[in-house]
Amino acid sequence: MGTRFTVEERGAGGAVTLLEGAIAFRRRSGGVIPVKLGQTLEWPVAEPAAPALREPAPLEPERPQPLARPSTKAASSRVPSTPVRAPSAEDVLRELEFLRGRHEFEQAARYLEESMRKQPVATRERLSFELGSLLTYQLKDAQRACAHWARHEQQFRRGHYAEAVQRARGTLSCEGER
Image (cartoon, rainbow, N blue to C red; front, side, top):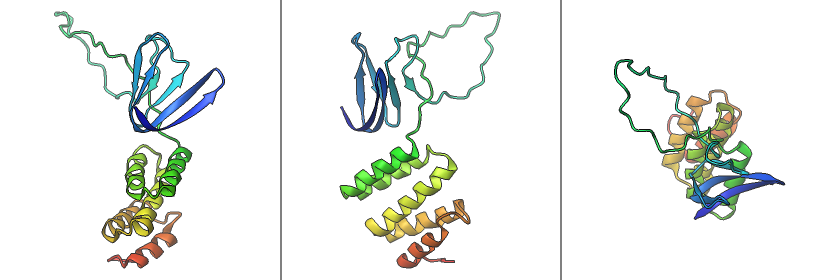
């Protein structure tokens, strides 16, 4: 069911990170673990007592139960998850090069937009620059590129790519150039 994923084999174990589509990982016992976009599943997969998927756990304070009444909530049948590991910057850039090589520029732009949300600020600047470059030079979408470069400059003032951003904005004749 998965269309794009990375697999790391480590002898007695390994991991798969889903980049696009869906994966249904079947345990030896016959159970199926669905893997969602951006999730990483590692093996050997522990049996249900220890979840195999890493997903961010919501940060919610525990609410105390009233002492006078028993709880009427039904127990959840969902297996709790562990935190998801966002694809590394190297994984994102590798996938970007793959998509560029296939001239799938629009898909690469969407992939970068999604990936940037899951990365630390230092990595986000690089991915934002790559997205702007795609919009400018491969997609030649001046409207989206100019809007992106304006957001990029606002978010990453005096960033590593400031000169290249200015060149790109000049190529596009973006309004409000500095």
